[in-house]
Length: 311
Image (cartoon, rainbow, N blue to C red; front, side):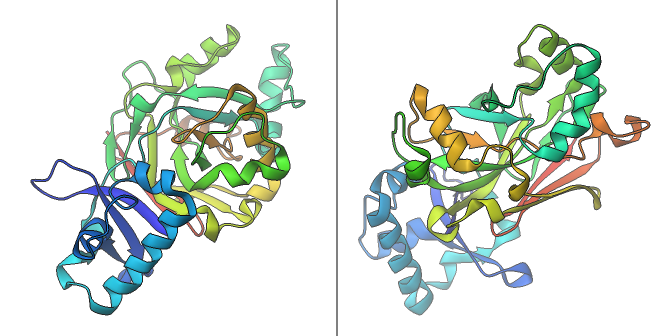
Protein backbone atom coordinates (compact mmCIF):
# COMPACT_ATOMS: atom_id res chain seq x y z
CA UNK A 1 0.00 0.00 0.00
CA UNK A 2 1.28 3.47 -0.92
CA UNK A 3 -0.26 5.63 1.78
CA UNK A 4 0.36 9.24 2.69
CA UNK A 5 -1.17 12.22 4.41
CA UNK A 6 -2.81 15.09 2.58
CA UNK A 7 -5.05 18.09 3.12
CA UNK A 8 -8.13 19.22 1.29
CA UNK A 9 -8.85 22.94 0.73
CA UNK A 10 -10.53 24.43 3.77
CA UNK A 11 -9.78 21.37 5.88
CA UNK A 12 -6.89 21.75 8.32
CA UNK A 13 -7.06 18.12 9.37
CA UNK A 14 -5.04 15.20 8.12
CA UNK A 15 -6.49 12.74 5.62
CA UNK A 16 -5.05 9.45 4.46
CA UNK A 17 -4.59 9.02 0.74
CA UNK A 18 -3.76 5.79 -1.08
CA UNK A 19 -1.97 5.91 -4.43
CA UNK A 20 -3.51 3.67 -7.07
CA UNK A 21 -2.06 3.02 -10.52
CA UNK A 22 1.01 4.41 -12.23
CA UNK A 23 1.93 7.25 -14.56
CA UNK A 24 -0.87 9.17 -16.26
CA UNK A 25 -3.45 6.81 -14.74
CA UNK A 26 -2.29 7.42 -11.17
CA UNK A 27 -5.16 8.34 -8.83
CA UNK A 28 -5.36 8.94 -5.11
CA UNK A 29 -8.18 7.50 -3.04
CA UNK A 30 -9.31 9.55 -0.06
CA UNK A 31 -9.09 6.61 2.31
CA UNK A 32 -10.43 8.66 5.20
CA UNK A 33 -13.63 9.50 3.29
CA UNK A 34 -14.11 5.89 2.24
CA UNK A 35 -13.60 4.67 5.81
CA UNK A 36 -16.19 7.12 7.13
CA UNK A 37 -18.66 5.97 4.50
CA UNK A 38 -18.13 2.40 5.73
CA UNK A 39 -18.54 3.67 9.31
CA UNK A 40 -15.06 2.34 9.98
CA UNK A 41 -13.21 4.42 12.55
CA UNK A 42 -10.00 3.92 14.45
CA UNK A 43 -7.13 2.52 12.36
CA UNK A 44 -7.83 4.72 9.31
CA UNK A 45 -8.30 7.99 11.22
CA UNK A 46 -4.64 9.03 10.92
CA UNK A 47 -1.20 7.75 10.01
CA UNK A 48 -0.36 7.34 13.69
CA UNK A 49 -3.49 5.21 14.18
CA UNK A 50 -2.72 3.13 11.09
CA UNK A 51 0.81 2.39 12.33
CA UNK A 52 -0.39 1.59 15.83
CA UNK A 53 -2.98 -0.86 14.48
CA UNK A 54 -0.31 -3.01 12.82
CA UNK A 55 -1.53 -5.87 10.64
CA UNK A 56 -5.16 -5.19 11.53
CA UNK A 57 -4.81 -1.62 10.28
CA UNK A 58 -3.39 -2.77 6.96
CA UNK A 59 -6.16 -5.33 6.60
CA UNK A 60 -8.76 -2.60 7.21
CA UNK A 61 -7.02 -0.38 4.69
CA UNK A 62 -6.90 -2.99 1.92
CA UNK A 63 -10.53 -3.95 2.51
CA UNK A 64 -11.59 -0.31 2.29
CA UNK A 65 -9.61 0.22 -0.91
CA UNK A 66 -11.27 -2.79 -2.51
CA UNK A 67 -14.72 -1.62 -1.42
CA UNK A 68 -14.13 1.94 -2.63
CA UNK A 69 -12.93 0.79 -6.05
CA UNK A 70 -15.98 -1.40 -6.40
CA UNK A 71 -18.73 0.92 -5.20
CA UNK A 72 -17.19 4.15 -3.92
CA UNK A 73 -18.03 7.75 -4.77
CA UNK A 74 -16.13 9.24 -7.72
CA UNK A 75 -15.37 12.34 -5.60
CA UNK A 76 -13.09 10.20 -3.43
CA UNK A 77 -10.60 9.84 -6.28
CA UNK A 78 -8.40 12.58 -7.71
CA UNK A 79 -5.34 12.74 -10.00
CA UNK A 80 -2.16 12.39 -7.98
CA UNK A 81 -0.61 15.71 -9.19
CA UNK A 82 -3.58 17.58 -7.72
CA UNK A 83 -3.11 16.21 -4.19
CA UNK A 84 -1.74 18.57 -1.52
CA UNK A 85 0.55 16.08 0.18
CA UNK A 86 1.85 16.60 3.69
CA UNK A 87 5.01 15.11 5.19
CA UNK A 88 3.86 11.46 5.29
CA UNK A 89 3.98 11.01 9.06
CA UNK A 90 4.52 12.76 12.36
CA UNK A 91 8.29 12.31 12.54
CA UNK A 92 9.65 11.63 16.00
CA UNK A 93 13.40 11.29 15.38
CA UNK A 94 15.31 10.85 12.13
CA UNK A 95 18.64 9.04 12.31
CA UNK A 96 20.33 9.84 9.02
CA UNK A 97 23.03 7.50 7.80
CA UNK A 98 26.37 8.55 6.41
CA UNK A 99 29.06 6.95 4.23
CA UNK A 100 26.96 3.82 4.03
CA UNK A 101 27.08 3.14 0.31
CA UNK A 102 30.41 1.60 -0.68
CA UNK A 103 30.86 3.79 -3.76
CA UNK A 104 29.99 6.98 -1.84
CA UNK A 105 32.46 6.08 0.89
CA UNK A 106 35.18 5.75 -1.73
CA UNK A 107 34.35 9.03 -3.49
CA UNK A 108 34.60 10.97 -0.20
CA UNK A 109 37.55 9.11 1.28
CA UNK A 110 40.37 11.13 -0.26
CA UNK A 111 39.21 14.43 1.22
CA UNK A 112 39.04 13.08 4.75
CA UNK A 113 42.25 11.05 4.55
CA UNK A 114 44.10 14.24 3.63
CA UNK A 115 42.85 15.68 6.93
CA UNK A 116 43.65 12.63 9.03
CA UNK A 117 40.02 11.59 9.49
CA UNK A 118 39.33 7.88 9.40
CA UNK A 119 36.17 6.42 7.91
CA UNK A 120 35.03 4.11 10.70
CA UNK A 121 32.95 1.28 9.31
CA UNK A 122 32.84 -1.02 12.35
CA UNK A 123 29.50 0.54 13.29
CA UNK A 124 27.09 2.68 11.27
CA UNK A 125 27.70 6.42 11.08
CA UNK A 126 24.70 8.60 11.81
CA UNK A 127 23.49 12.05 12.77
CA UNK A 128 20.13 13.59 13.66
CA UNK A 129 17.99 15.18 10.98
CA UNK A 130 15.46 17.34 12.82
CA UNK A 131 11.76 16.88 12.16
CA UNK A 132 11.50 20.69 12.00
CA UNK A 133 13.61 20.64 8.80
CA UNK A 134 11.19 18.36 6.94
CA UNK A 135 8.86 19.40 4.14
CA UNK A 136 6.50 17.59 1.81
CA UNK A 137 6.96 16.69 -1.82
CA UNK A 138 6.64 19.57 -4.34
CA UNK A 139 7.83 22.03 -1.71
CA UNK A 140 9.96 25.04 -2.58
CA UNK A 141 13.13 25.10 -0.47
CA UNK A 142 15.23 28.23 -0.14
CA UNK A 143 18.98 27.82 -0.31
CA UNK A 144 20.34 29.06 3.05
CA UNK A 145 22.17 32.39 2.61
CA UNK A 146 25.13 30.93 4.49
CA UNK A 147 25.90 28.44 1.75
CA UNK A 148 26.87 28.37 -1.90
CA UNK A 149 27.76 24.67 -1.84
CA UNK A 150 24.16 23.49 -1.67
CA UNK A 151 24.01 19.74 -2.22
CA UNK A 152 21.51 16.91 -2.69
CA UNK A 153 21.51 13.38 -1.22
CA UNK A 154 18.83 10.81 -2.01
CA UNK A 155 18.25 8.33 0.82
CA UNK A 156 15.89 5.38 1.13
CA UNK A 157 14.27 5.58 4.54
CA UNK A 158 12.79 3.02 6.93
CA UNK A 159 9.75 4.15 8.93
CA UNK A 160 9.63 2.55 12.36
CA UNK A 161 6.12 1.48 13.30
CA UNK A 162 6.44 0.18 16.85
CA UNK A 163 8.67 0.50 19.89
CA UNK A 164 11.68 -1.80 20.05
CA UNK A 165 14.83 -1.93 22.13
CA UNK A 166 17.88 -4.07 21.38
CA UNK A 167 16.12 -5.95 18.61
CA UNK A 168 18.17 -8.55 16.75
CA UNK A 169 19.04 -8.21 13.06
CA UNK A 170 16.89 -11.27 12.42
CA UNK A 171 13.81 -9.56 13.86
CA UNK A 172 14.67 -5.95 13.02
CA UNK A 173 12.46 -5.57 9.95
CA UNK A 174 9.41 -6.58 11.98
CA UNK A 175 9.58 -3.09 13.53
CA UNK A 176 9.47 -1.36 10.12
CA UNK A 177 6.06 -0.07 9.04
CA UNK A 178 7.24 0.94 5.60
CA UNK A 179 9.69 2.88 3.46
CA UNK A 180 9.83 6.43 2.13
CA UNK A 181 12.38 8.84 0.62
CA UNK A 182 14.51 11.59 2.17
CA UNK A 183 16.47 14.17 0.18
CA UNK A 184 19.15 15.10 2.70
CA UNK A 185 19.84 18.64 1.44
CA UNK A 186 23.15 19.86 2.79
CA UNK A 187 24.93 23.18 3.33
CA UNK A 188 28.38 21.76 2.67
CA UNK A 189 30.59 24.63 3.86
CA UNK A 190 28.99 24.48 7.30
CA UNK A 191 28.89 20.70 7.33
CA UNK A 192 32.65 20.46 6.70
CA UNK A 193 33.41 22.98 9.43
CA UNK A 194 31.17 21.06 11.82
CA UNK A 195 32.78 17.74 10.94
CA UNK A 196 36.15 19.20 11.87
CA UNK A 197 34.55 19.63 15.31
CA UNK A 198 33.35 16.01 15.09
CA UNK A 199 29.70 17.02 14.78
CA UNK A 200 26.98 17.51 12.18
CA UNK A 201 23.94 19.66 12.96
CA UNK A 202 23.36 23.10 11.42
CA UNK A 203 24.62 22.18 7.96
CA UNK A 204 21.87 19.56 7.69
CA UNK A 205 18.99 21.23 9.52
CA UNK A 206 18.10 24.62 8.13
CA UNK A 207 14.33 24.90 7.51
CA UNK A 208 13.35 22.86 4.48
CA UNK A 209 16.56 20.81 4.24
CA UNK A 210 14.64 17.58 4.81
CA UNK A 211 12.22 16.93 1.94
CA UNK A 212 10.44 13.70 2.87
CA UNK A 213 7.89 11.58 1.04
CA UNK A 214 5.96 11.61 -1.12
CA UNK A 215 4.21 8.82 0.82
CA UNK A 216 5.04 5.53 2.57
CA UNK A 217 5.17 2.16 0.85
CA UNK A 218 4.13 -0.34 3.51
CA UNK A 219 6.64 -3.03 4.42
CA UNK A 220 4.41 -5.91 3.31
CA UNK A 221 5.21 -4.81 -0.27
CA UNK A 222 8.97 -4.69 0.37
CA UNK A 223 10.01 -8.09 1.72
CA UNK A 224 13.64 -7.39 0.76
CA UNK A 225 14.63 -3.68 0.95
CA UNK A 226 18.12 -4.47 -0.35
CA UNK A 227 16.67 -4.57 -3.87
CA UNK A 228 15.51 -0.94 -3.79
CA UNK A 229 16.99 1.22 -6.56
CA UNK A 230 17.70 4.94 -6.08
CA UNK A 231 17.87 7.68 -8.74
CA UNK A 232 18.20 11.44 -8.35
CA UNK A 233 17.95 13.98 -11.15
CA UNK A 234 18.47 17.73 -11.24
CA UNK A 235 16.53 19.42 -14.06
CA UNK A 236 16.22 15.99 -15.68
CA UNK A 237 19.96 15.22 -15.54
CA UNK A 238 20.82 11.99 -13.71
CA UNK A 239 23.14 12.72 -10.78
CA UNK A 240 22.80 9.65 -8.56
CA UNK A 241 22.00 6.04 -9.42
CA UNK A 242 22.52 3.12 -7.05
CA UNK A 243 21.10 -0.03 -5.54
CA UNK A 244 20.73 -0.82 -1.86
CA UNK A 245 22.82 -3.91 -2.58
CA UNK A 246 25.78 -1.48 -2.22
CA UNK A 247 24.93 -0.71 1.41
CA UNK A 248 27.71 -1.35 3.91
CA UNK A 249 25.15 -1.69 6.72
CA UNK A 250 21.82 -3.18 5.64
CA UNK A 251 18.43 -2.07 6.89
CA UNK A 252 18.30 -4.92 9.45
CA UNK A 253 21.79 -4.03 10.66
CA UNK A 254 20.95 -0.33 11.03
CA UNK A 255 17.65 -0.93 12.80
CA UNK A 256 19.29 -3.41 15.18
CA UNK A 257 22.20 -1.06 15.90
CA UNK A 258 20.14 2.06 16.58
CA UNK A 259 17.54 0.13 18.56
CA UNK A 260 20.09 -0.11 21.37
CA UNK A 261 18.99 3.41 22.35
CA UNK A 262 15.34 2.53 21.81
CA UNK A 263 13.20 3.18 18.75
CA UNK A 264 9.52 4.08 18.61
CA UNK A 265 6.69 4.71 16.20
CA UNK A 266 7.55 7.68 13.97
CA UNK A 267 11.32 7.23 14.01
CA UNK A 268 13.14 7.21 10.69
CA UNK A 269 16.38 5.48 9.74
CA UNK A 270 17.94 6.45 6.43
CA UNK A 271 20.47 4.60 4.32
CA UNK A 272 22.81 7.51 3.76
CA UNK A 273 23.40 8.68 0.22
CA UNK A 274 24.97 6.89 -2.74
CA UNK A 275 27.77 8.30 -4.88
CA UNK A 276 27.25 11.25 -7.18
CA UNK A 277 26.84 14.10 -4.69
CA UNK A 278 27.99 17.49 -5.95
CA UNK A 279 30.75 18.02 -3.39
CA UNK A 280 32.65 14.94 -4.59
CA UNK A 281 32.51 15.70 -8.32
CA UNK A 282 35.85 15.82 -10.08
CA UNK A 283 37.61 17.88 -11.21
CA UNK A 284 35.28 20.76 -10.36
CA UNK A 285 32.14 20.39 -8.20
CA UNK A 286 31.00 23.96 -8.82
CA UNK A 287 28.59 23.26 -11.73
CA UNK A 288 26.82 20.55 -9.74
CA UNK A 289 25.73 22.53 -6.67
CA UNK A 290 22.04 23.37 -6.49
CA UNK A 291 20.93 26.77 -7.74
CA UNK A 292 17.64 28.70 -7.48
CA UNK A 293 15.21 27.36 -10.04
CA UNK A 294 16.58 23.82 -9.99
CA UNK A 295 14.07 20.98 -9.76
CA UNK A 296 15.30 17.92 -7.89
CA UNK A 297 13.55 14.56 -8.26
CA UNK A 298 14.53 11.76 -5.92
CA UNK A 299 13.10 8.41 -6.99
CA UNK A 300 13.17 5.06 -5.24
CA UNK A 301 11.63 2.34 -7.37
CA UNK A 302 8.46 0.81 -5.96
CA UNK A 303 7.99 3.86 -3.70
CA UNK A 304 7.72 6.91 -5.96
CA UNK A 305 9.31 10.29 -6.66
CA UNK A 306 9.98 13.09 -4.17
CA UNK A 307 10.12 16.46 -5.95
CA UNK A 308 11.70 19.66 -4.63
CA UNK A 309 12.22 23.07 -6.23
CA UNK A 310 15.14 25.22 -5.08
CA UNK A 311 14.65 28.95 -4.54
